[in-house]
Length: 238
Image (cartoon, rainbow, N blue to C red; front, top):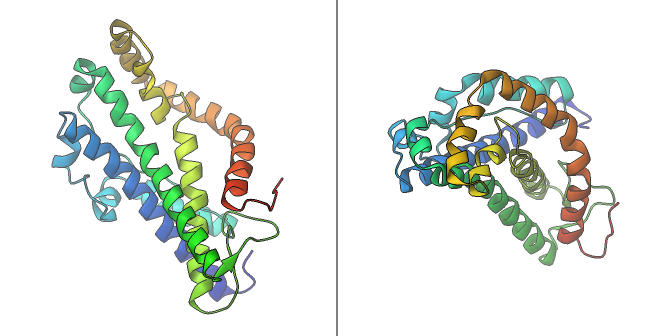
């Protein structure tokens, strides 16, 4: 945890920058995939963009209020959400296309995990940072010197950790998460439309989020440890 107010502000800024990057990439990937597969709804709303402003305009509570409030309360991490619109009639006509659109968001998060991991490994090879003895979300890489290396290591650590969380969490097959929207890839087409209609019941989304919130920590812990050990082979995090 930061020891002073300037350190806390710097950590909060790093978290918010990583959060906006991650959510913008996630929603832009959904919107781009939908456009390529025949639904221009999100494109017409300006969502096919890495610029966070259209995503903030669509979900100001999830992209501004909740992230900043969650960090102010925890002083360690940040949570929130964004969304991209789609045409439900298009999804009903093309359930498999809709499923690929659902998977595009988590795929973008995993791409950011890979990018951050490669930059961390490159920095380690150049002597900029090394493996921490005990990794946290904000300290996956430990800077070997002060100055800009501290900020770069913190930002890359958060991007790595946050996108691992977002990618895995959104793959859970419960509404309203992307994993539930991807299930038509495994279902016969006649069942897929019924499944998509079933997912649109509002109470299901609330129940799904509560279930995901309870189950996810047990699933994430071993996968997070595995990711850290792949990033820093030989360290053997537990």
